[in-house]
Image 1 (tube, helix red, strand yellow):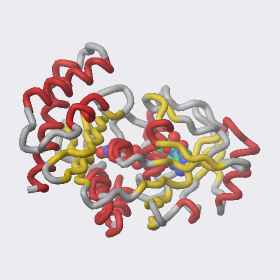
Image 2 (spheres, rainbow, N blue to C red):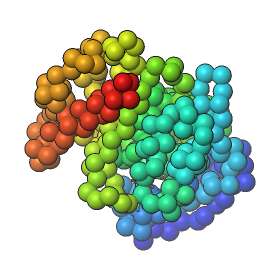
Image 3 (cartoon, rainbow, N blue to C red):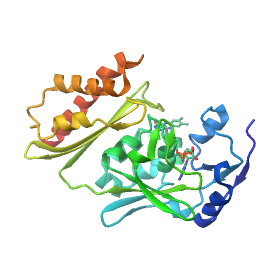
Image 4 (cartoon, rainbow, N blue to C red):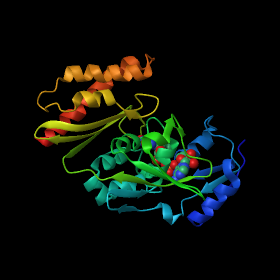
Length: 289
Ligand SMILES: Cc1cc2nc3c(=O)[nH]c(=O)nc-3n(C[C@H](O)[C@H](O)[C@H](O)COP(=O)(O)OP(=O)(O)OC[C@H]3O[C@@H](n4cnc5c(N)ncnc54)[C@H](O)[C@@H]3O)c2cc1C
């Protein structure tokens, strides 16, 4: 049975001191929508810990703020706050769309961005949009502060580069210019309160009907959410009215299988990734026109 002591620091400095003094025996608690389920289910992924540290009252980890070149989003920002933020709706509608699909109202009111990224589920819905937006996470310890690309922070399924003495304080999302279009797709087993079977985020810069830049990331198609760079290269500099969707579908499925090898889920996932990318591109092109 898990036995632990609960702690609730009042500010970030107190938390950093606790992390420094106790090191590996600590588990941070934000919204608890992933962690409490793991504790309840005695998940194999959960390592033993002596202290459960509730970080929910740390104001330093809250708030959404426009900086010069990027948007700062505190790690304790909830999914509901993302959905309701005018700034996010205006600058990064893809994030709002993804956050809207997460769980239920109750889960969106509790679950946080920091928890979604740190839990590092291959199906986490904020990961793919933040990968294509080139989001960075800021990690702080008592002595150090570092900034990592989200794709470098995620080291495997349910694994990250977070050190025992660190907390994620915020993410930084670089602003993009107005020629970019966004799209998010999610396939789930049922309509409500369902984890993604596969999700997809696309951002594309389209000028004079030409795709001049495109980033594509799939979640749950591969062990860790990642960009499909071969498809990006293939689509770059193509005219939006000359896309061969059958070829796009095949190439997308082939890129997935090249990464994963053939698995039990391949007959299902291979056509689905191609169809999802086709749908995302068609929706973007409709918007352009
Ligand atoms: C019914 C249900 C439906 C769900 N549906 C979805 C869905 O549709 N899509 C989806 O993506 N997710 C879904 N989830 C998962 C979950 O709600 C999200 O991943 C949520 O964002 C987790 O955030 P949290 O604040 O609750 O994290 P917690 O459970 O508090 O923490 C999760 C992990 O992150 C660590 N952590 C939290 N904050 C920090 C920080 N600032 N720094 C370092 N480490 C930190 C914790 O130590 C823990 O290991 C669902 C969960 C439930 C129970």
